[in-house]
Image (cartoon, rainbow, N blue to C red):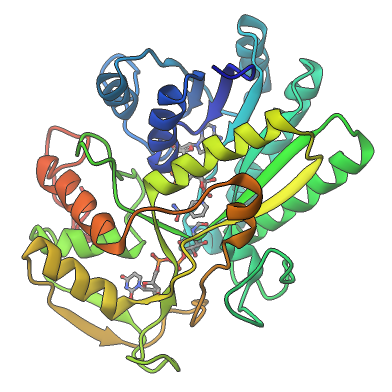
Length: 360
Ligand code: NAD
Ligand code: WQD
């Protein structure tokens, strides 16, 4: 059992947070979780449906509060009730398109939420933080595979991505000013998949925009066809290339980061969490079809505005220093996501009201 025993998890009812909590509980940590359900499903009694299932998977208890990070007093009250040793900050809104339409909403939620959290942590003498950053901070890569030393903040094509970059800058600044801070920012590449039990997975409130849920919506018949953005990139099959990583690998990356924070003082460190493998959209579609036995009709249209062409990680730093490495294959990402989808055709919701974008 770790001496950082109680982890405060923000945004823990969401996709990555819920999977990470399974790993945290399995590693012996206790968790206190907050979420405001802006992008996750709540049950009739204000509970998180995903976290109830996490309790079923692990046989352990999740302490949960419905709380908006913009409500600093509510946050303060929770910190006053629990002895928090460490924080993992997942809570953010993440829709790239929406962030261009409502930039103030994104700056307010993501930046003020982070500021409130940091101030409350400081007030309660808690200085250990793992922050959910994103490969989006790199912009269009100058070289591949991309290392943590690659420039960040240039040509970020959307407001959401800028909130991640601005927060990284903020975190670096506070660690310069106060050496007590012990912070790791994890730059995730593209998470896919679900817990192998099929009990938890990805079920956002906001419309789907990422590739895997859309493929799966086509496979299950909620959407007629997949739209592939761009067939004229300088890649072997013309479609965009990404570094897809199983969400359970991301989850174990957080446990590795917490272990590192407790082992030695980091001040401020940044790690890529990816597999190091580039996979094209068509390769992903074909793999999904092959391992699930489904057919995914698709049409190739023009490039999506703001999309980069090729992005994949050099994940050696995390391997060397965090002793973490991704284990799960692309096939497992597809099979596990499909299991979640077929066991829960309507996600965490019981009543299905199909919408035109394939979402309920
Ligand atoms: P998600 O939307 O499923 O989870 C985020 C959770 O935070 C949601 O449950 C939402 O309700 C909650 N939340 C948002 N604002 C809040 C607020 N003000 N107060 C309380 N709760 C709030 O998203 P996810 O995919 O699990 O992403 C988790 C984190 O990882 C985010 O910070 C995201 O930006 C980052 N990230 C995600 C990806 C990805 O592709 N999924 C890639 C890189 C980084
Ligand atoms: C993957 C590939 C698309 C949908 C986004 C955010 C990034 C990070 C991860 C949080 C691309 C193609 C997609 C579709 C398609 N999130 N695609 N048809 O764009 O790499 O990254 O999520 O930090 O910040 O920008 O992920 O899943 O949207 O796209 O052809 O209907 O699939 O063009 O090549 P992306 P994605």
